[in-house]
Structures are given as C-alpha cells and as structure tokens.
Length: 188
Image (cartoon, rainbow, N blue to C red):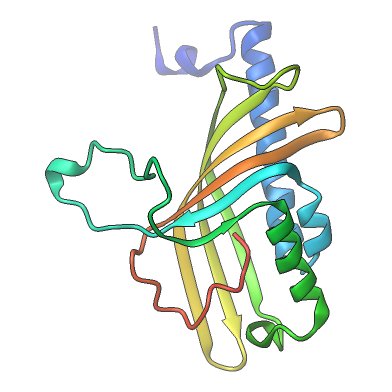
C-alpha cells in the first residue's frame, strides 16, 4: 500500500470524519476571528452554560516525568479558572471601556493549528461531545511598544447542539511557566 492510498478516504465513515474535522476547524477559526475583531459577546455565545475555562500554571518537569499528564487532577494554581458567569463578567468588563489593561484595546491575532479530534466516550445525555486538541499562537500589541506572544496547547471539549458546537470545557496550557507579560487580559 502506498502512502497516497493510506491517506485517501475509503468510505462514507471516512468522508464523515473529514467533514467533521472541517466543521470543527472552521468553528475554531471563526472563534479566533471573533476575538481578533473584539466581538467578545459573540465569542461568549460559543460557550456552553456549564463551561469550565481555565489556564493551569505550568511547572518545569524532569525528563523522567514527561509521561505524566500536564493537567493536574485537582486545582492547584491557575492563571484563571472561569465558569460561564465569570467569563460573562470578563466580557462585560471588556465592553465597559473601563478595563485599565485594555484601554486602548490590544491588537491581537489568534492563530490555531494542528487540530485533532475524537468523539468522547462519555458524552452527556443526547449531546455528542468531542475531545479537541489544538495548538495556538496569540500575538498582542498594545500601545506603541508592548508586544506579547503566547504559544501553547488548548484541550477543548466541544458539544454538538442543534445550532452548532458549544465549548463545554477549555484547558489552556501555555508553553511558558513564567508569564512575563504585564497582564493576561486577552482571551484565549
């Protein structure tokens, strides 16, 4: 079997997987566009009401510890740990014009790559959920000379609904364990 034959869809199930991959990627690209264009209220509509949106603090690991999961079982420390109502407060603050760290607003670019997905075995009720891993790069420029670049991995749980996907959980893993930015006022 040649390499070309191995990556060719061979049936309806493969075609459905390709279409699902495309739909998930387009959802994530649209989310990035909403953030880049300061459309925070529309961005918030992409989240389920039972969402957990968090960024645990990363720790340096020894080589022998690399096989361990990066996400702690319990909450130890996090840069943020938000539910839907605290995300709503963050969005309201961005719209208020009184958010000191975002006046003037940052110019951001959210890049999403390397999207991998699989159906969750423990989907809730009638809703189908997917584990989605992606890499991100967020570039921010603020005022004349403040520049920040954050790179990392997002681990999402996307829930299929009648109107499209909703983000039911997002874990953001920065590749840096010490954040040297003046603040983390942007959304990931």
